[in-house]
Image 1 (cartoon, one colour):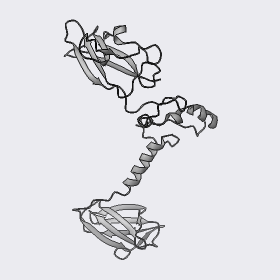
Image 2 (cartoon, rainbow, N blue to C red; image 1 turned 180 degrees about the horizontal axis):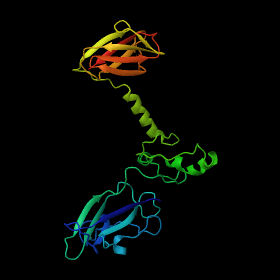
Image 3 (spheres, one colour; image 1 turned 90 degrees about the horizontal axis):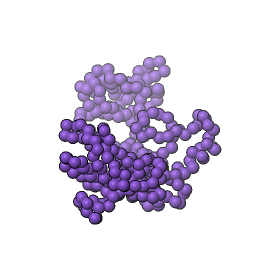
Length: 274
């Protein structure tokens, strides 16, 4: 069971709240008092209570111009709607023009998990995909974790927070989501650098730029004629054309860049792009 919270403020053209406005919510609305109008099922509470309608409970705005109610989704036992259901909202008060909004979509693109027993959840592909994890995985998940992982253990599994930038690893995401991330990462690594219109300088270490020692490290000062303090360097081993990343890269001036390695055993091709 899940219910979606729907609320609004009704104000005048100057932004002042209007109290006592009668609000009605429909699945089908033709016009005022038309016999074809169908009131939508709503709930006065997020978790308890029986379904009703805005007409039955005479829904009105309070002194702040505010009104609210809840609408059941497809997992609501009684009175819920599928995610493609659209609604119509109307409002009226003596002395003001009747207002109306059609085709209201109140359901989010991603749903919370419904912990129903495996096999009882709706089995459509659309329903399986609009969640961060599946019903089957979520069902009794906390009980499973409590049995396998001791409370307050450093291995406790933490929830995924989509907007968080922390580097904590003990979280669970769905196979589908992690597969999308992996696919994106793999494809991103194959993107080529567009150097059209750029100045390019090719040279070699140590033939064009000799090795120099500094403690346990070795460096070569790559000279070029790009006139750029921050050129892009691509370095590859001559023996196998494998791209490598030096220990550090330091721009000495607009035509000299120092690259530092831990060994001087290899020879490198250097492409500078400015």
